[in-house]
Image 1 (cartoon, one colour):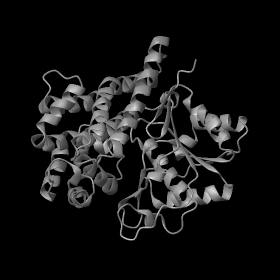
Image 2: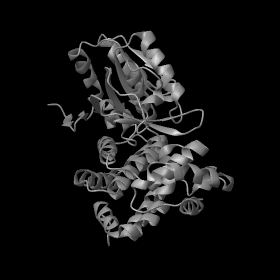
Image 3: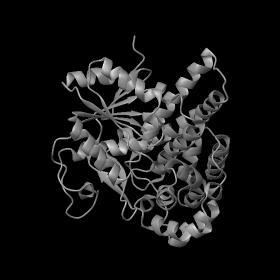
Image 4: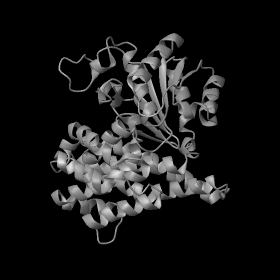
Length: 396
């Protein structure tokens, strides 16, 4: 009997060992035969990606791999991916990787049959082009438990000219099939496991704190926080043990798989929940990625505690609920923020921005970009440039 669980929310989501193989019947039932796997430069060289491409070829598919993705996604990576899709005459997109691969893959699919420039489809711009042409099948297979982009309707792509992050959004960018297979995450290094896991947690926390009435997203966010509280640290610790050359016992291997699977679910839930909104931490993190080219998950991890200290006076009752979801004794804002700091320390997140190369001369550019970011107005408390400056100084 299959151990794969199946959800429809509204994306068709399959979760469990070997879920990645379910792409084979999905392609066959649509009479598709030439998928383009979209991944990043690092993954393209690893056995997990090469074995997957071989699996599809042995099943009779003509497979090409586009892997010119690195760092935070930029427009030229999408443009090159569109050219690769057309040159290969592909008929489907399989996004295999972390958030960058997911974001680039979705916009590649968008631009196959849509005219104009990528940023003509930026969310909220006046006279933006409509998404009204066919979009190839999009299948997503996340190799990290972080962004949740595998179930998202948007992509964040930077403009190389002005370095501004732009959001390409449309409900039709929602992938048709998402395959959450813990096996493809088992070799993830501890540091990436940690930073992407805090990214997922930040989505859940900020979605719960975002303004507005949305009980569906609130409930999903609280359960996601609970999952992270139970399974992120074990994922990191298993990764550390493997890196040290330890061979896990059969029982520990099973626990590792369970922890990775639960974290994949938590990350997916974070992306579902943040359709309600995000907030201050993400504005700070987006600026750090723009100014310092910092990994998005790490940026969130370094900023979440000071940002939550800023937010707590506005909605203390919400912090109590989050502390309850995390299973904390004496649940309140103070214990929740203390738990965030302890979790960061336990999973090896650096102690502050200075530890990863941020300097005082970066402060004003950071304040500039954070102030104009679209996320913080959705949070529970108004933020001024002086507030951003103080938050960055506190995080140094």
